[in-house]
Image (tube, rainbow, N blue to C red):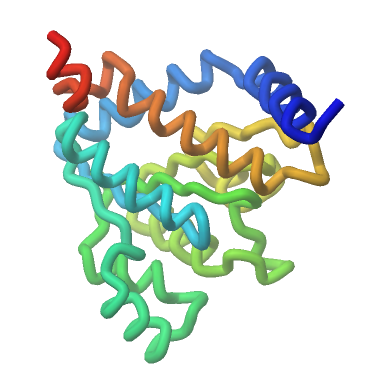
Length: 199
């Protein structure tokens, strides 16, 4: 069997293992956050930063969220990294955005952050700051032992069924899952352009 067939089979196994009830719970929690006037701050590093930027667009346009990603403003982000360090850049950005108890974080991360190992320390610090101010914490991650899964209110853990390819599978499934969320009837307020054009 070729690699393409193997990868697709792995993806199908992971999809089959995802918990639909947990996805529904995340959709409900996000809708409640929006309906309560809360803002959504989406955090990710590397490929997950790309997901965060795309997701901000869809949550704003399709779901009527006030949503932001710190990685969308490279000037401010790099100034904060330069002046305050990598570990504190997201927390400082959230403080500057006046994160409060009615707001929420949505974290996209393979590992979810690990302070002891020094992995994604900026996500760890951001989550800790969000907890201090009482903001809700959501996530889509590939590890149930990471900081996001341990501290979050509603976190989807993509089953790491293929350890040698946990990063590509987690990032691929993350895209699928946040697209599911912005298409969910509890969240979506207007159709995407192609769907609207065919009506």
